Structure formats: structure tokens, C-alpha cells
Image 1 (cartoon, rainbow, N blue to C red):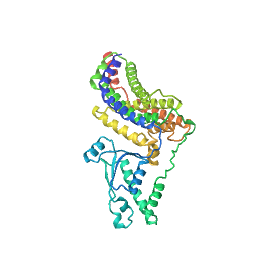
Image 2: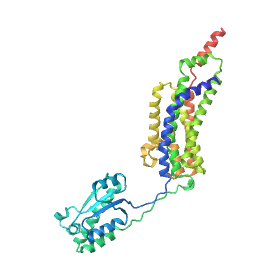
Image 3: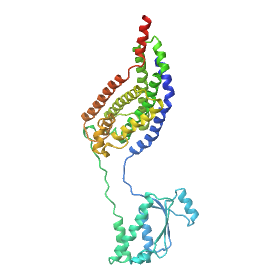
Image 4: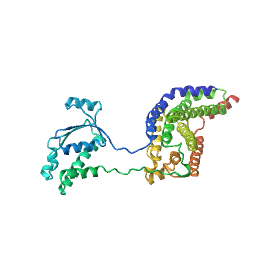
Length: 399
């Protein structure tokens, strides 16, 4: 088992570069899964707001009552330092001052008079909530003045404005049925875990497995093996066993980490299909790593090759950008890459694409076909270095 032990001794020194990708994956994937597993409900935007009424009229009080329907009014002393402290510590989001003369200016509809400022506002930074409040104030004033210009008195105009501005939109979420593969146990959260695995598997295996094989192909290691009494068949078996354990170990790390992020074991037919799909792609990624090593590139170029293969395949095949958002030309080219069929199966399992269980099995079988082709190509290019030299040396000794 000398070759097997040497294999893992070399692999131990290469693991840190792969662990970086694993750590980043879990750091990024955890919040994505938590967001994806939340139940989506529509809620009106609400902010904590402080209002100072310098006008103190029926019109200004009507505005305050209208704002209070969907927001929280907080009392804070009117002091610039106190206001800044409250905003800094996020006690309030928005500070509104209704300036004196608000009622009088609101009733004016001439273009010149409409330019007079009715409010003073304070907020630390621009955000969706503060922009919505500014839009609400502009809409409230514009609508009230429109009703006044139409012949209504101020009180009637305010009443009509509050009726119109208070209309709630009927919000509903569209749900797409993926047919006979729909599974409540396989939601968007679990699908997110499996969606990004192709990039991680390619990156980790190429950065771990390829350098190990390159070290074994170095001249010193190769000559030492050739001089030993170890048969070529045992050499190949031990290399294969070491590679298989690394692939299985890395794949299990992702599966165990996925169950931790998911908060429990994966259950259901769709989850089991996704696990099978990921294992097949792990074998594909391992074969790509062996194929890259067979060309004997410099070790410092392996990371560059990894990024070219990983990023190129994943951007084209729908790992980072959903396949539904990619153009027909891109998808047509991506069909010649295994990651496309992996993502296609994963999308059908999660309901992002429509399809039957037969379509999923078709995608998996195509991946297996890719695996078979890659294995054959790898065998052609991965002739063990030095085997011919050993035979020639043996022949010379026999003479």
C-alpha cells in the first residue's frame, strides 16, 4: 500500500486549497437557503417615523392620521442631536416636519404657489422605505390639489384623497406546478444547496485531485516507482482507490453540510434523485480532474484551468444564472456540457422547469453518457508514464 499512503500524504498538503471553496460555499449557501425557505407573504412597507406638526391645523392632523395607518409614529424631542442619535441607533427611520402654513399652501393650486415647500425631512441614508415615504407625501399633496382644482373644498379634497390613496392592491403569488415530480419535501431551499454544487465539485476536485496526480507523475516519483517491484496493475488500483476515497469524501462533506444547513436529513423521492444526480456529477468532476492531470500542466496553472472550466461551464449551463433566463443560443451550446443536464434535472425536481420523472431520468442518463465519454478520453491520454521504460529496463537485464 506504499502508493496509496503516498497518495494521501500528497493529498494532505493539497487539501487547504480545496477547503477554501468548501468554507466559502457553506458561508454563502447558508443565508441563501434561509431566505429561500421563508414563506413569502406580501406586507406593506412600514417605517418608524417622527412627525413635528408646526402648522397644527385640521389639514396637518389629517395627514398625520393618514401616515399613522401604515407606519409607527414615535415621539422624540425636537433637537438635532437627539434626532441624529435616534436615527443612528435605528430608533427611527424618518423624521418629518410639517411646516407652518401647510394648510394654506396646500389649498393653493397656482403653479407659482405650488413650488413652496410644505415639509422638511431627515433621514440618514436613502432606502426603499424612505423613498416610499417621499413618494407617499408627493402623491398625497398632488392628489389633494387635484381634487381642490376640480372644485372641491379642502376638507372634501382630503377626504377623497385618503379614500383613493388608501386602496389596497389585491396581491397573489403565482405557483407553478411541475407535474408528477412535485414534492413538498424538495423546496427551493434544498434546491439551492444542490444548484451550486457543480462549480464547487469542479473547483475542489481539480484543486485537490489534479495536483496530487501531477506530483505522482514527477520524474523523481516516477523513477522510484519504476525501480520498485510493484506491478503496474497494483499501482493503478492503489491510485484509483485513493482517488475514489477523495471523491467520496468531498462529496460526503457537501452532503453532510447540506443536511446541517437544511436542518435535517433529506427526505422524499426528489431529494434522493438530487443526491444521485450530485454523485454522478462528482464522478464527472473527478474524471475532468484526472483528464486535466493527464496533460501534465504546471501545478501553478491548475487553478487557472479550474476557473476557466468551472466558471465557463457554470455560467453557460445555468448554475449562477437560471436556465430560464438564458438565451436559446446559450442553451443550445450548453447542451454539449454535463452541467447543463445536471441543472436541468435539478430545476425539474424543484419545479423551476416543467417535466416528468422520465425527463429527469433522461437528463441523468445523458450525464452518465458524458461520464462514459470522459472516462474513455481519459484512458486514451492517461497512459502511465514510465511503464515502457520499465519494460525496456527489464528486457535489458534479462539479456
